[in-house]
Image (tube, rainbow, N blue to C red; front, side):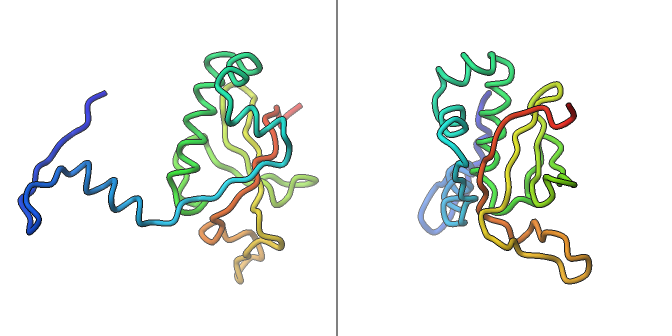
Length: 140
């Protein structure tokens, strides 16, 4: 994949569009992630462990989801993986799709999480720190 480079003349001379975006993103606070267990931490941080435990396809999806998590400011900005809040005994948690029935489960780090005045539900725009819980099939 090639970076699109758009050169703009500014006060500081020629600057690539990609560099300007990177500089701007570095100024924004990023989503903070922690881990509920050593198991999920190893799955998220160790390539060899990811591929061994999850297989190539799921490991690649996990890396993509983690990259997006670390690039956004809050949960509501997530675009990939069909983000959805869970219910019943998992109320307060959310999941994102990896592949097939497998999901990456997370919860806000802040307890109690910020809530919406109108509904009492979690205000995902205010959640900028999450705990990664596990990877599992939530349907079975």
